[in-house]
Image (cartoon, rainbow, N blue to C red; front, side, top):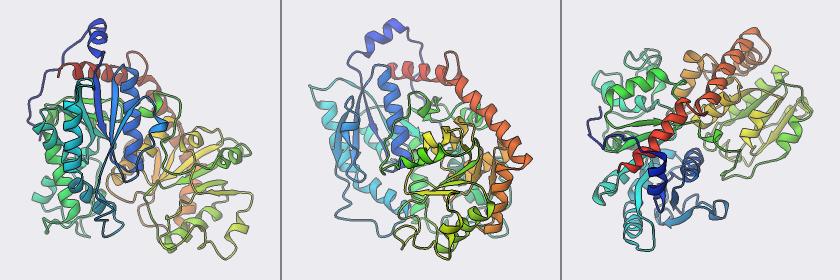
Length: 466
């Protein structure tokens, strides 16, 4: 799958490294979505703590606030969205358009940084994996590019798309959705993104194909994961790849919790949790992009109510298209859960998951949320909505066995059953024991001699080899 020979990883002494580090700059380019901004800025902080200077190139869309990161230099570029906004609200349309509109502005900005005599020499470029156009730009400017995969090592699920097309598994057929993919156990056909394979102009097809092809030419992959969590997938990828792989996560555990949230966090989340019993609350949040129709939303609501468990529910404005916020919650729902349920527009998630009252997490299975839940020992209910969320949910339910996946839609009876299984039944207690073992491994991997500690050392050394 990957056949590009890159510089050999070399050991560099601490003294030599410190001498080389003086004046070394890294340029990072985050994708402007919440679940991608967070890990990129966390990675930038990690590398800054190792002595590197950081320049952040960012789009006008979801523009970053430089005042939150005074130790970084920020360079905004035009993304053309004011002139040519996406035709729909689908994320794939936005990402496709950004990969077209940002080519020239990004290339010009990077070329200016490279030629500036007032800037330190640039060691390499680090971009989100979805910025596939940046590989050609980096090659043209003779600058090494490292790729940050903000998801788990389920990138394999995207790289295997050619195989699935050739073998007829894609496009999906109703009769095939439950079939396992022998090349990538335990995944099933339904765990892969839906796309129109018959149409090579399909935007998701082109986005994934462009990402896979471009990333083959990179100088290495950085993962927000750790060896002990994804050992088989990591081993498979290493057999297929010549470029180095650096699983150095979990990123958010390197420093005290800090927020790069694009939404205002409601502090009442924590004060309300303070009034609840230990491990009693189910925390419900589906990230910054997921949407549900009104029927699904009401089934979720009454499943929560009927479970009789205390809950903290993040209902983000825009979660139900066409509604401002809680308008669909009619017919006495709020009265039925008064004192037992707390609803906010956005919550400080890391603090919520770390709170003693939180006993379960109903999630969309985004990788950041999945990893944060593992790191706090909180078992999950998984309702994946798109892309690699399905893969994360499959691993949580079938491999690590720390979650319950709602695979057959959202019916209030199934929601109630899943909550009670997780929160009060023996099966949930067994999940809690297993996830506490993963939490311990996550803690150990970052300590001196741990797998992520060693991988970060290798990454820093590798950057000096360019």
